Length: 291
Image 1 (cartoon, rainbow, N blue to C red):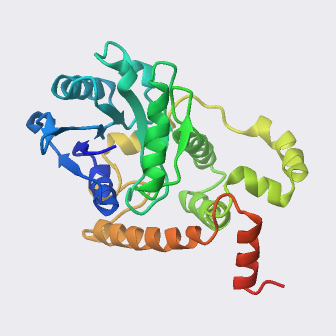
Image 2: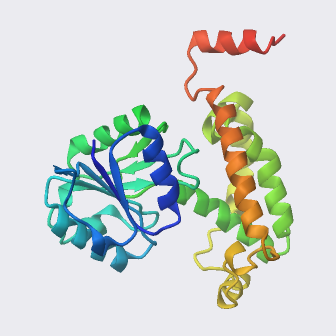
Image 3: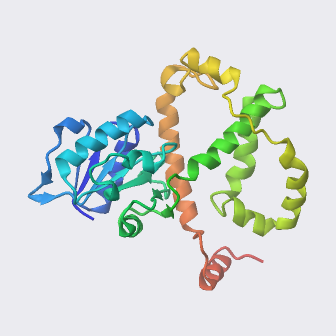
């Protein structure tokens, strides 16, 4: 899977470049797609990683440029959170070579990698990328064979319910963040939602969900308070305001803390593998002298 081409000026690009650099694989990074050449050191690119904003027209335009410049032998892996892979493959010159690949920031310290495929994509590509990511990029990848990823759907459901609670006065923004950080934030790096239910007992969750599910939000619109935030250009730390207000220089401090935290959490997660073997359970037990 080398040499690798990384294209895009998206905020993810820097972390992905660091990830590739740490892997020791041969890669080239370009911010401007118009500056591309079709080869690197005489070898055609095996894989092109494209990261763009979440805009269908932008993604399709850049895919066309890549296909024109790289030909039909290069795999193109593009980030796509809400746009179906089939829409990106539509009218493409080499649709079987296009696959979805989602990262999270910082891309070089997190284990996350979501690989999206469908019936059009060449069957072997997802496996190739998954093996490369696990062996060289230090990722814990998963493959979705359903045209669209699941990470953003899960996040979207959480955000929708949070918006509902804030909009209807049940909780403040600070309440929501504390509830997420101090509960789910503790167990999610260890187990994930469904394994945690196994750990705690699925019966109790079933009883709670029976009464709770009918009350959960199924709203299909963006709430008014969030629309107002967007209209006032409160786009987050970079603008000085979002759900919270930020003074000059605070964004840089938060970014520094986020990177430090990501490294520390990564080290902690590495101590607790996703799928324990019997031997690993014994090692953890002995290492921490559990009683």
